[in-house]
Image (cartoon, chains in turn yellow, brown):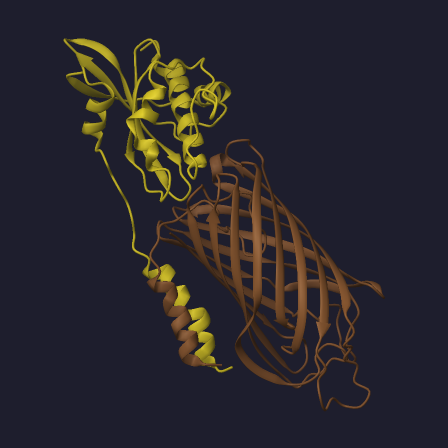
Length: 182
Length: 296
C-alpha cells in the first residue's frame, strides 16, 4: 500500500469534518420570545439580578441541577402599570450545542409559557411544537418535572427534553429564591 | 490496492446526504447505550489502522461500511461489510504470519448486529444496552491469508451522563466466540506451523472511557480496553491492554471520531525473537481508528 492510498482512506474523510457546514437556527429574538411567553404584557423591563452563592445552593437544592450563571437574564413583564410576570432567557445543554429558551413565569410562580429561541440539534425539534411546550403551562416548582411522567419524552432528543424540563424547573426555583419577593 | 477505489470510497463520505442522530459514537472502541429512534438510519464508515509488531513492517486497515436502522425506539439493527487492506514484510510468526503480503482493499465478510436499549441514559439516569452480533469473514485479519471465520459477539454497554450531559461515561463488557478454519498455503518453509484444522477461540473484553464536551460540537475523551483470548488447547493464550485519547465532532449532518489506541501492556504467548511485554502476535503496538457517521 502506498502513501496515496492511506491519504485517501484516512485523509479525505477527515476533510468532511472540516467541510461540514456550520448550522445555527435562531427562531426568535429576545423581544419576540418575551411577547410570545407573556402575550398580555405591553412592556418588558430588564431586571438586574446577581445570585449569591447561598442562593445558587438553594436553587440547586430545589431543582437538583445547578444554576450555571449567577447573572441570569431577567425581565419584568408589565401591563397597565402593573407587573404581570417575569421573563427569563436561559440556556441548557443539548446533544451538541446549547439550547436557548425563554420562560414566562407569573408573579405567583407558575409557568406562563416556554419558547425555544435557538435549537440546533438534528433530531427532536418537536420540542419547538406548541403542543409539547404547552405542557409546561401552569406548572409550579412543586411539580415533579419528570420525563415520561408529567412531561412526555421525544425519541431521539431525550437529553434535550430532559435538560429543558430540568431547566424550566430550575427557573421556577430561581424565581422562588430570588424573584418571588421582588 | 486500487487507488481509484480508495478515493471513491473516501469521496462517498462527502456525497452522502444526511442529518445527525442519537447513536453517535463518542468513543472509538467503547460503545454507548443509546439507540437510534424508530425510523431513523445511519451510514457508518470505520477505518482502523493497525501498525507495528516490533520487527519488520506491518500495517493493516480494517474498513467497515455499516448501515444501521432504528426498528423501534428501543431496538436497532445493522448490517456491515468488512474490508481488509494489509501490507507486511520482514517478519514471519510461526503459526500466525506465514509470509509477506501486500493486498487490499479486499472484501472480507459481513456482520449482522442488533442493539437493544434496556435503560436510557437520559431518561433513566443510567443507560444499559445489549448488543449481539454474528460475523462471517473469509480473510484472516492478522495475516491477510484465506481463513473462514464465524464469530458471535455479545456486549453489555453501560452509559451515564454527568453535568447535564457535558460529561459522558461509557463502560463495556464483551464476550466473543469464534470458529476458525484456515486454508492451506503452498510453499511454506519446512517446519512452519500453519494449522488447517478448525479452532475455537473465546475473547473476553472489558472497556471504559470518558468523553467531555469542551465546546459546542466538540468532545475530547480517553478510553481503555482490556482483552484476553482463550483457545481450546492452551487456555488463556494472550491478553492486552490498550488505552488512548479520542476526539469527537458531532454536527447536524454528520459526526466523526478519531482515536489513537496504543497498546500499553500485554502478556501471554510471544513470537520467536520478540522483546518487550506486549501482545504482538495478533495485535500491534498502535491502532488509529477514524469513524464517520451520517444520518438519513
